[in-house]
Image (cartoon, rainbow, N blue to C red; front, side, top):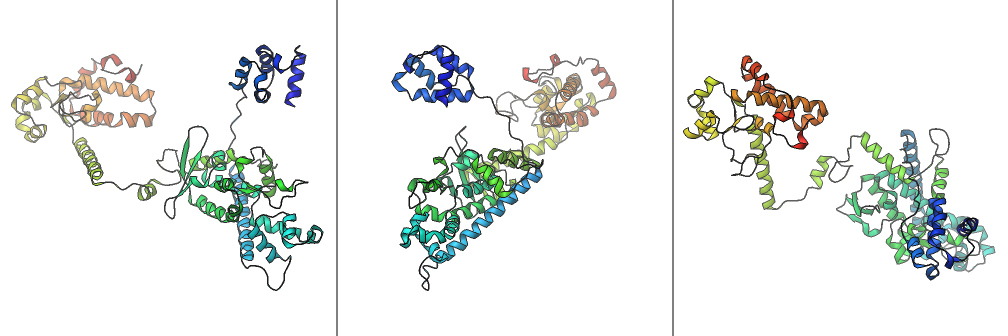
Length: 519
């Protein structure tokens, strides 16, 4: 089809030579007029021509797409009813497959029936379990009978073989239910191998997978996915015993239908992995939808798609309150993660964690203290009237005089010690922003600081208009609350009115960084 379309298009454009006569201009004309799918196929065709192509044209055939396919519209999640019916149907189907598998395995392990030799169900089940997924001709040869004599037992053989060795459509159904339970991308589930499954204890299973976009990822499987995984390993056990080493490495192997093609007389159905049948297309999904008799909300057949399953899984989690910001797994609460997945610390690490906790608690206690706001009269008698505050600030007579005279002023307060290292390295000038002084235990607020405090209040008002409420409360909330509730009310109304006249309500009044501006 690709060759016919390409030849017809080139002939219509006036080209009459062979592959060796093709030039870049001929193919570019064809590619720009064709769809992205036809471009990709024709490039694959040209790559197989080898040395017949000129070097420049060969480079084009191996390079990036000249015309890319249009991006498809993201699939919408299933509705609540569709999702419920899909999960219930898959779960019921899986339970039926597991129940039938266990019954046939139990029957096969009874061994050959000593009372009756031949083609009864017990003997056939034992034969299939011991020899593998035999075809009809393979069973007839093992029993030493002709296919004509064996014809009456074919129905029993097929049902026993289907129960012992899951076919492709059964494996696809379990894979779909696994996606419903864990929400991993379809390609990640499809290509998982036995080495990607890790049992971390008796109740925790880790699965590594590749999305083919950003490398290997891992997920802790939810409990339902773990139970389904155990059930599948039980069902696929006989398959793995008779599979090749390559097929046995994959998780979702299955019995292929290839030997059912007319003219094929192989004694065994081959056991392969999904990676060996990339061209399966839409048939498994259509077959599964018909098998489950699923209907959409509009009344038509429900279209199954693995990527849509993943989208719905994450929508269901979001409705339960998951924001995607959990550390380990979205299916666990913070308490479960802390109880079961927090690693054991060494003594040195424990000391470091305890030091961090102690520092944080001390910082909270310091912030809880009321701000030190002094009037003109209180400032003059500060040392005599507030000896506890003088001791807390660690001031001697000289430092106290500098504090009250303005020599230790910063933008919004007078700082008892700018080298104390409360908000930065000790011995270095404090790097804190102007509003941080409102919660600093070393800050002393005096009447001369009122204009800057009011400028800061105006800045908070401008920020509250340009930010959402949650953003403002997270960034400026504690400082605005301290300013409006604990600092400004301590000053007389006359001083506040006089200082208000000095405020122009612009960013130029504050020492701001470019990213902190409100204009």
